[in-house]
Amino acid sequence: LTGFENLPAPQNVLLSSIDMIHLLRWSPVFVSGDSVRYTVEFQGEHEREYRNGMWQEVLECLDIVHPVCNVTADISSNVDYDLRVRAYQEERVSPWASIKKMFNRQDTVLTVPVFNVTARKEFLQADFTEMPKSIVFVLKYWPKGAEHQAVQVTSEQNPFVLVQIEEGVTYCLQAWTHVEVIHKSSNVSELQCVSIPSTLPPWV
Amino acid sequence: SVQIHELREYFSEIRKTIVGEDGNSGVRLLKEHAMKNIKPLESCCFLRQLLRFYVESVFNRYTPKDSQIRRRTSSLANSFLSINRDLRQCNAHLHCQCDEETKKRIEAIQSTFEKLDVSAATVKAIGELDYLLDWIETHHHH
Image (cartoon, rainbow over all chains, first blue to last red; front, side, top):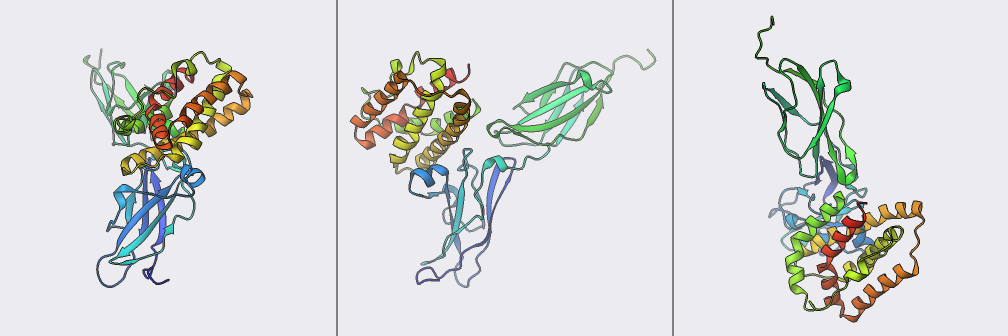
């Protein structure tokens, strides 16, 4: 380490991205004395190619204490991004530590959506766990045993309310998520089948 | 079109400040007549040149002090780069080389831009992004 930079650089700098939430993590720097703080910077292709390799601050991660930074707001296009972090303690500062491989949001991992289905006489309701707004839910449903009659609906609203249903019929549902800006979908969920209550007694 | 939706969101976060900084409201870069009546085959090339103008002449010379504006300018610049890459593929298929008329339209925009000093010119160009996004939505939907 040279003179001013006599703090060790953060190690294990990793970018994890799940459902379009991009988090930078690193191992904390352990030194005696006051707490160590961190600052994170990003660089998109424009900064690399047209701004002489300029780095930009991640506004939410200036002088932070915890070794994690949500960079979602800055990973805001489909180019490759580089990210780096360094540590501070009083006057001491560490070298920068970068992610091993540049990150593109198209590599985000889209998880299979989790949803609960409620059956009423007049409608079917599918409640999904919340997702970032760039993610839409796609729901496919059909009368059990008649998948050829499947209806597919896409919605940013949550919950889904499906009204084109018939009393006494059992419906099967599957769902997945889709992110249009990266043209990518998740895997399909497990099948869920529910029966719509019927006003008529069973012997009719 | 979804990326346009994103661009509009980014620009909406900084529009008021940037348009407010434009001291040359009497001057317009993306003039209506320059953006109108572009032949369908030419629109791909026209757009590519315009995005390239923004990436290479506007965003890289724009140095805002405000961190939020810096953030969203970066989002816009990198998005333009990404869209232009997508257009390159479309360009490869359509083999659409700019004709003389399209070149003149782009040159007219660039010369108006160069007449202003850099700071004023970049503020104006970014402040006019609504015109560009409107044009893209109109011409790249059909």
